[in-house]
Amino acid sequence: MEVLFDPALVGALRALLVPAFSPRRWRAFVDAGGRPEDLAAPEGARLGERLPLDRRELNALAASLAKADPAAELSAAQAAGVQVLAWGGAGYPAGFAHLADPPPAVCLRGTLLPCDERAVAIIGSRNASAYGLSAARLLAGDLARAGVTVVSGLARGIDAAAHHGALDAGGRSIAVMGSGVLEPYPPENVELLERLVRSGAALSEFPLRAEPSRLNFPRRNRLIAALAVGVLVVEAGERSGALGTVRHALDLGRLVLAVPGRIEDEGARGTLRLLQEGAAPVGSAEDVFAALGWCRPRPRGLPAAESRMLDLLPDGGCTAEEAAVLADCPPDAAASLLITLEVRGLLRRDKEGRYVAI
Image (cartoon, rainbow, N blue to C red; front, side, top):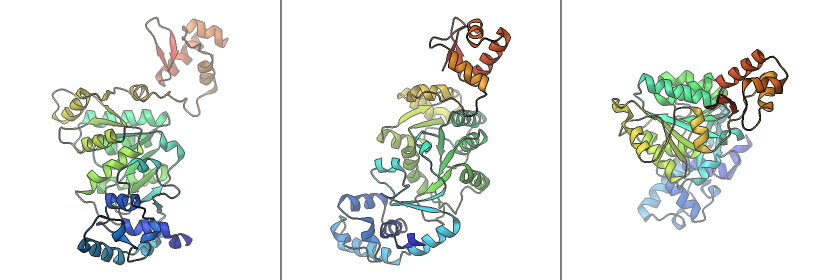
């Protein structure tokens, strides 16, 4: 119960509960020297010195702040097992600090871990084709198996497929919601949300019971971009909302990647444009690793024989016969191990037929 008396948390949550106190106004307030605890009092101390608003706007904002009830929201959050993370406080996502308009607070279900800093956002059309859905699941699963956290928006189509792909692979996924974390949307993704909470996280910059709004989803897209190192667009039309996330990613200096679509598919025109403008083309998880300059990590729980074979391979690779000598095992056994490692995506064969570690 002690968090109810943390002035910084109370002040940040009061700002979150007042729609007129937008993230941009919050940033202006902080940049002008305002502190979250300054808003802990219902009247919102010294707003006029911090915000470039006229007297009428200031009075209206102060009245809204006075009506907000952060203590009740915090009590409801505690009862539901939801964490409220305040700007500048412990647990607040580090990526949000890079935003020109960071949320004053976010509500979190599940857990954020240090490994989530190695994250890729996978996004795209709500009305995705079977090809797009399959590609999103495949790429998300391969990335998750390699220890990458998959970030998306819990929407229909590509978003849901990416979340499912990561979770089905036993990996982590984070959903950034356009509604409150206790107001799941769309309804068909309620079970998916519960899976995410158990194996990853769901977060929102809106109050706990905020209903989905047409304006919320473009706004939450900047948070998706901020949580990830790169943004991968699987399938998107020319007017897809996913392209808004790309704009935020570019503003933040994040890498943009895109999956080539079928030329006859109207739903792939947006990704085609991204590729024409310089997005990194992606046909596999290996392309993502290469574009980001990452080494693919060795999967956890790799059988001892396979792990030993990887350790024995020289930097330039070797043939199956040479691997058998190095491992001091029969050629058939060495060949079987090498093929298994190739299927796992940990080896590739070069033009000379030599096995090279990825």
